[in-house]
Amino acid sequence: MSATALSVVPRRRGNLALGRFLRHRLALFGAAAVLGLVLLCVAGPWFSPFGPLTIDLRHRFQPPFVGVHWLGSDQLGRDLLVRLLLAGRISLFVGFAAMALSTVVGVLVGVLAGFYRGWTGTILMRAVDAVLCFPSIFLLLTLAALVSPGVVTITLIVALTSWMEVARVVEGQVRSMRERDFAVAAEAIGVSDAHLMLRELLPNVLGAIVVAATLNVARAILLESYVSYLGYGIQPPTPSWGNMLNASQEYLGSAPWLAIFPGVAITLAVVGFNFMGDGLRDAIDPRLDVHR
Image (cartoon, rainbow, N blue to C red; front, top):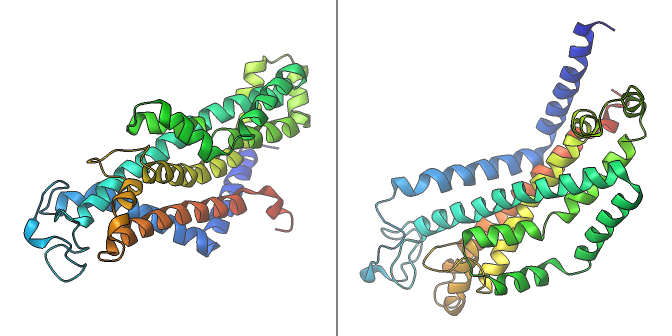
């Protein structure tokens, strides 16, 4: 097969995957929701006349859509929209950063366990199983209670409780790829283990890694919200969607919008990333190309 023909094959597969993703309506909705949230959280606060700590006692508990505060105000008269968007910056940062860290750790453990198998793979995967034995939310709360809460520490803690699923996915994919003809041939001509893992096996499992990473963003946002809601995460006055829900508890009857909008934001972010993950999984799965 010529070099031109070889270059057409991955291009065709990429076009087919993109086409499948674009036909996945829920995935498109998820991508639009995530993109909209990111743009609003990044750029939105710059266009507001209110700061996140600006106190307006004359407009305390202003309902949404009836005054100067578009989404209403809280018990101190602070603009809810600005705080919601700034909280989104924190929650999304924790989600993306924790995803990146957990993906790196999970891929490293999964590739080593799937490639070497034997005692090395057994020990690594038993370590994964040992961590998975603990419910993630209790493990997260335990770790959060032992350290000083903050954006960096919560990100690290969420990452440390989220890498195991990535490791399992990657280990299974690498173990399967390890027996394929291309891997056996590369090993037969004497390539190094590092070359075989990084240049031959890892590119073939990138699809599964991308899907797992996308779903991990949603998981990280949800875990940060849990911990902050329970008071062990991001601390006021720094807003996050979780601690905004915590602060709104005593006003559910008189000012329900203080809980509704952060809850909607969390739901939209988590559902958006989950839909994107489902769409990417369906688009990347090569078994869907069989009858094309």
